[in-house]
Length: 151
Image (cartoon, rainbow, N blue to C red; front, side):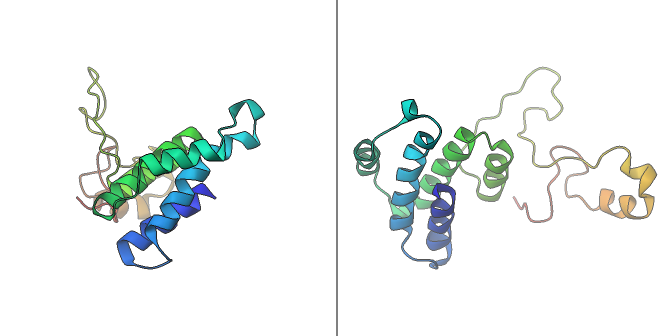
């Protein structure tokens, strides 16, 4: 429910569709704060505490996309849905992340944008691999970009 509300808030903010962004944002944040109680009563955060958080961090349309997608990042990471967190970050650019540049890492301190094609693909599907491999903006690397991922 929280994911859906935050995505509806994003759509309302971006495209003025699907209702009021603030209403969806508030519902999404409140639900994101309280959802763990379904798994363990010890993880219960009261509705009043969740509402107090929403009240203390009100939706602001000027920074709405950043607020919405930062909350979405927090929610999907708390759900251990890291691929969704990463995919939404690539879609929106939020939250603003600081990459870590470990010595000898594969991306030179850039957050990965995509998975490269598997090495076996060239051998098993050469007719399609060649054109696909060559059409990736930035090359078929972790830092290349999928077709919709524009800078």
